[in-house]
Image (cartoon, rainbow, N blue to C red; front, side):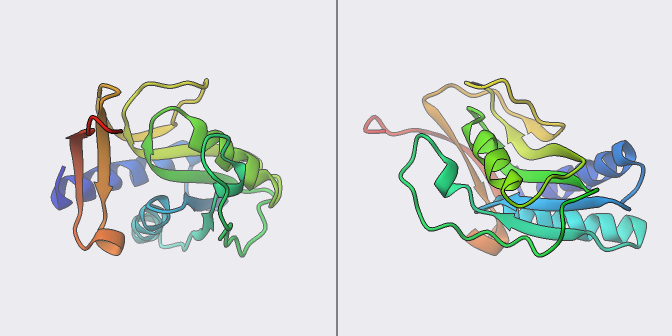
Length: 170
């Protein structure tokens, strides 16, 4: 995917989010660090453009909640109350489901929303946990030997989604 494909996919996802939630009144978007955060901001801008209403955006750092990675310093920024909200968790790639499980644990430390939905740019399969996305930009079947890399202008200076063969060392 290139920048044009990415914009098209995010536009479709924003429309799907609005349709399913009957507008933007109780919506908030929370991006999972790192690339989920700029994706959440992009979706929020699209939603605001369609609805004329701003949508709160927060950042969620899941490092303390991962069971398969070393713990790091958490950098979460949710500056609004989650009560009575429809939270859309936003991430770049859905793979095993472990990041989403960790995000749910981290999110509930900050309040109890009415509902949590999941939006991902890419679903590559290979789930280890019973987790599925409510909104998917692209389903890209991959092998476990492949890696999906999402590049965003905000973090990588260009937009792209690449499938790479993992090195033999990995």
